[in-house]
Image (cartoon, rainbow, N blue to C red; front, top):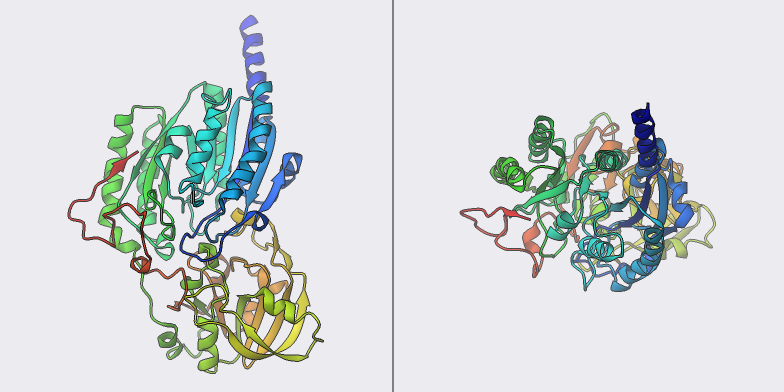
Amino acid sequence: MAGSLIERRENEREMSARILFGGLFHETHTFLDQLTTWPDFEVTCDAAILDKLGDASPTDGFLTVARQLGFTVIPTIDIRTTPGGMVADEVFDTFWGEFAPRARAALAEGVDAIFLVLHGAMVTPLFPDVEGELLERIRALPGAADLPLFGVFDLHANFSARMGRLANGLVAYRENPHTDSRDSAMRATRLMARALAERVSPRMTTVRLPILWPPPGTGTAADPMRALRTEIEEIVAAEPIIWAGNVVAGFSFADTPYTGVSLSLIHTGSEQLAREKLAPVAALAWAKRAEGGVSYPSVDAVMSRLPRDPGGPIVLVEPADNIGGGAPGDGTGILRALLRHGVDNALVAINDAEAVCALQSLPLQGTIRLAIGGKGSALDAGPLDLEVTLISRSAGTFDLEDRHSHLASMRGLKIEMGPCAVVRTAGVTLLLTSRKTPPFDLGQFRSQGLEPGDFKVIGVKAAVAHRRAYDPIAGATFLVDTPGPCRSDVSTFPWQQLPRPIFPLDDITTPKFEFL
């Protein structure tokens, strides 16, 4: 009887665990001209973070499990924005200035564990490894050195030694497109609960590979990512002391000492065992390294042979202006080709706040001449001078149609494109936005009165993450090469910090697998 009472009290203590929460999310393209500053971030503090419950984001995943288990969540600050250029140092300074005092106060009262929502590829001029710097600062706070520290992160992270050494369990998304970001946060939260219940402290073992894969080569429906995930999952299933494993594709548009593919295990066993398990998976990644490389024809080559009756819209995918990879989303490559080839009934979204502003006083069905697109990257051919007719204007807000959309991992369910305008020029309908919005959900167009299935050709500024939305309606899909900052030929970037040698930039006879 006494034993039962003691056990019940222990269970009550575990279920009322106090969890310190914070979020820091940005995928940084270091080769872009634009600086990402504090106003670019969506900032949520304190109790307002708890309102994210139900918004389909990773934060929602954490909050859902925390509520199920009866945890007390101590929210601090959560900042996030879509991928973009180098993050200003002041952003991290401001974030830490908000997070640290809240964390110190909570730690002084008592905290049982820490949970973080991260990206894993955030870079500032001073900190090429922002997430590692954050973890080191957290561990230095009074009372935080030995607390269980778990979190969730994007599979396009550039995973550093500090991230693995200072965390007990960081869990990566398994899917690309990121349809499982919320589920991955739930998995990570359950691992944290297991650590608390079993009173054990797992650790991470990571191996970094000399491989650089551009985003279009990292879709998880095909090899190499599919094969690597299968191998990792078999290891986890066979070894009870291995709690979880990650296949991390890396983010190939970030010039850092940590850029590249990595594999990791979360475990309670020996370092030697974890390395032995990871070694053959690393060898498989190396054997399949060429399968992560991609190339595709020029947009004009594709335009010259479009199928006549594909049974649905022809989707032209433009990885070089991939908004999900940080590009400005205003490239004119596909738009120029559509106009040059005289395509009728085409649809393209262009991020151009200046153009939207110029249309504010124009009456509907009015006509104006505008310089559209080509303002965000020196690699683009520049703005197009077009005569356009205004069809509609809106505030640019829409709710995701698909709760599992890749976009939910970035922004939750409610999406703000900023003021928008729909215009037509020749045979092309343009959705002009004021805030770059990755084309990962058809609600983007439908909210503006545009049905994507009604168009003959749709230009999509993406690489992989558009597929869940567009594959079901597409009659045919072509990846096309255009000018832009996210081209998949990674040899064209002026690398300075990248660890060398690395495939495909160097001729490597014997690969070196670096265990972290």
